[in-house]
Length: 253
Image (cartoon, rainbow, N blue to C red):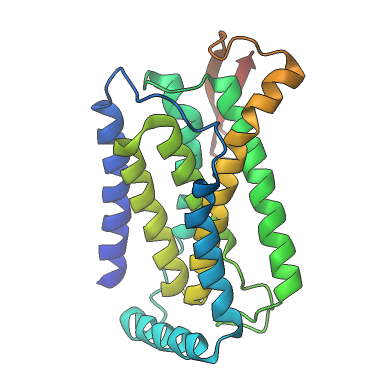
């Protein structure tokens, strides 16, 4: 029962992104995504700090266990939902792809691509270095790579990238999807609450790092015109032997 409800909520979040994209206007507010300001660190750093407190605070650990027990009662006997393994990438795909299907974007495909690559690399380094350094045990196993949540970091990074690129309307849908994935990490007993809080902070910070680096790339690579022409083509295919669908992509900067 609850599993079907959660899946419906995730589907509703996806629909919200698509509806917002369809209704998206042809103008965007002035772009400040590339400008570094100290205040832009407040939210992600606060989330990371709260999540870190959960590793060392006995009171927070007790609250973590209460949340885990509540999720166990909600989940019942082995009613796991593993949609989070796949949905985590949807906001990132939306950030990269919406501008290529007619949605008004602040940057061209080339620039969105390098922003995504930088953000993903930053997120991967921060998440994996912290997992190795902290060594927090997962709630469902003896593995000591629970803190922070990589799935949550990935999906919140994509949500923040989408918000920064396309505005608040589409960003709300992306963040709804990200919140659903964070909830599923708790529901599936893969993480503690503080893991997903810190993961969200790392994801948001990584997205902002991606945009802060864009002016540097323009200088390095001589991209004098932010909206230079980019050509992209998709070629679908079907392999009869393995019964799989394939999509080829050709990109010209």
